[in-house]
Length: 163
Image (tube, rainbow, N blue to C red; front, side):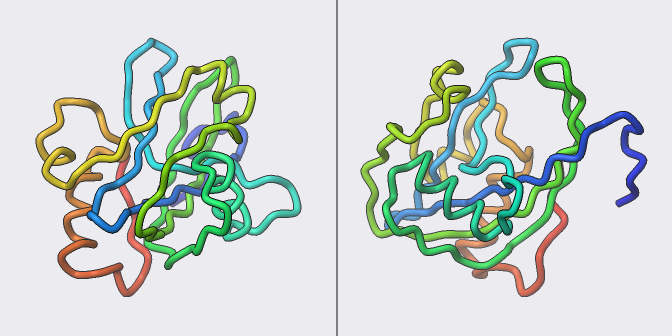
């Protein structure tokens, strides 16, 4: 990808984690676009200064799920998109990981102030539920990505993920 997606966009290194439980359910969070449209997306967030993407992914899992000692799986893909949010245009550069946990009672007490203010909700999705959902999933081909990982395992090289 080129660096000219949007010349005024602020680069935002970010991580996302496809967290699957022992029943092959995927944990997703609900957010809202600036126009108020809901969408569902995997755990993750910004890479903080001085942090590696791996460190950020582990930190985000702890903050967003309460999982005390996350075990990060492989880097499965990369995604880049430009989004306007709160008056800023961001060039979001995501590194995606896979992680597995047998069971997890999600604890959101580690949410950031922005996550609390957004009344962010979470839900475990079955593969069938992902494929049949009329809700917007991020990325749009998320159901296919999860189905592929469950069928074939993680990709041998990181994929370029769509919007």
